[in-house]
Image 1 (cartoon, rainbow, N blue to C red):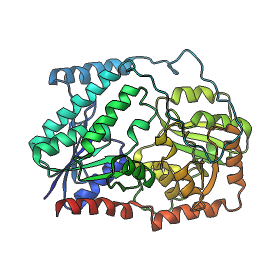
Image 2: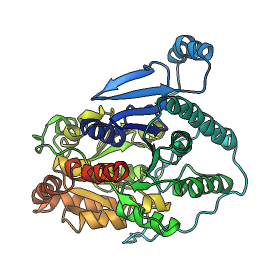
Image 3: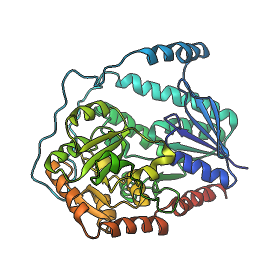
Length: 424
């Protein structure tokens, strides 16, 4: 049995792409371990569907005990302020719609490290070395990094064990909003350029991302979409309709983070009263969004759901919304997970007029596009989609597209083909 070591820079709790791949490989005769973060309250070893999660960190056993048993209790007992900032957030201004959205201009980043960035990069390298030490003792046959911040650990292990190396990048790494200085861009670009040459296979989440990476590095990159396992269309639930007072619901479901157009989505509720905007998720922006929505009776902020409930919870909405702002290339070319989640739930889709979203939403006739920088244009799209006599048919087409093509049963063959190529 071939041994496979996954490396992922998180706790491996909610990363469905990682778990889908690990489960598929284990079901096809591979022994899989996931090396990832250890955080207070989580087990160091965990069995799931035939594979094992190995959580490690850079702390000593004494420090780990202190953090887990003492500091965790102190943190949980503290009272936190609801918004975390003294300056109240403001609703974004409107603008004349621009469609399709133009590509983002080159970012003007400071030419020096920002506070904490160098320490963070050192931490990433340190934890990668910890994972590599643990994985090397196991002697895997294949090492797969999930994203650039786990590639060093996978590459070090692969070299030590004469193993094959796979790089699965979920993002265009240095074109993300959280990369905020030119020295940090240069660090990650240099690391990727050095280590990607050692890889026997490179995967990413979409064709546009693959094209960018192929042009950048002159090597084949295989797209592997973040599709869910196919399941019958869920029966619509009335839970959100009850919360919305019977009005239709436009649902955003996912991370509540920067540059996802969530402030603009909330601001769009001021331009119409017919459709309720609902945001379900978690993230750093949540307190500010709660404050922005205060006093608006057609905006709902909902608690996040468990990963295994994503499709059923999505089906509570009347339409799915994807308002990502094209502030960077990663967002401009994005094919987000929620696209396939909404499709599988049978929702028509209102989305930002971005290249790959347009390919699906217009190409498959699933919904309507808008300028995500314009709250008024978002409101126009939500009303237009709700009143569209083809709205139900669009949701049916979305679900049917998942049954026929955009499902993990189909996409997973790309992963298995890749592993077959490397092991024979």
